[in-house]
Amino acid sequence: MTKYKNEPGFHYFSDASDRLELIRIDYQPTLVKRLFRQSAIVRYTALNLQLNWQSIENAFENDAGKVEEIFVGNTCADFDEERISDSKRVVDTFIYALPLQTGLENDKILFVMDGMRLHIYNPTTLKKANGSYFDLIRKYIFEVAVNNGYEEIDMQPSFIMKHESEGIRFEYTSDGHWNEAGHILVAEKI
Image 1 (cartoon, helix red, strand yellow):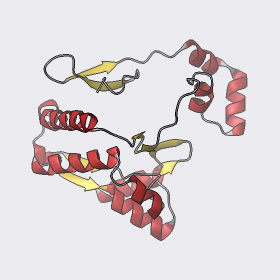
Image 2 (cartoon, one colour):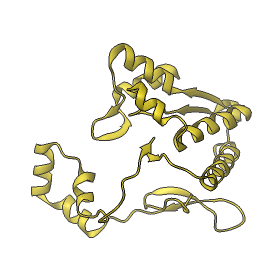
Image 3 (cartoon, one colour):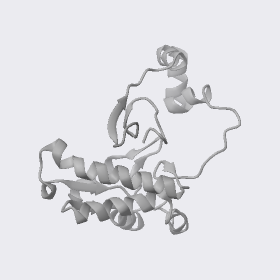
Image 4 (cartoon, helix red, strand yellow):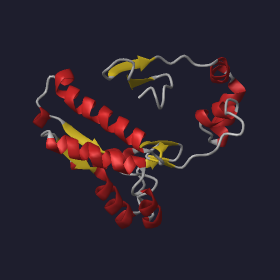
């Protein structure tokens, strides 16, 4: 919801009226980002030191004195009842709208749910992630999806089992998206 995040380049639900409305906020790079992306010295340094662009760009744009938050699933782990209630409302709206927007029946739509990656590789960190905002909402999405006749695959147990048996990680070192191993395992499960 735009109430919680409204960074450019994404779609959000806006609560401007009496119902949730899906909107897109377009991305416009800042002057600093445009200059860095054109800089040969920044490119050379980033490639040779194996830095990622986001860390270089953000080093010049971070807010001073910002308190670091604990994240699970790339979102703040903490929550209050209002955030949970708002999130459930978004999930309900999304689940209802999905067949209308896709033209598919519910039983032809498959939800593949990511695990709490970064936390699944260690039982202690996984235990700490349980009960986080991400954990509660991913469980709610499953519940609503299954109750509405959707198919679902929870990748967390598969990621954990594969990591325990082979030591494989499922995201890039400089990026939280699934790497090749993650995509292969998801494709196998599908």
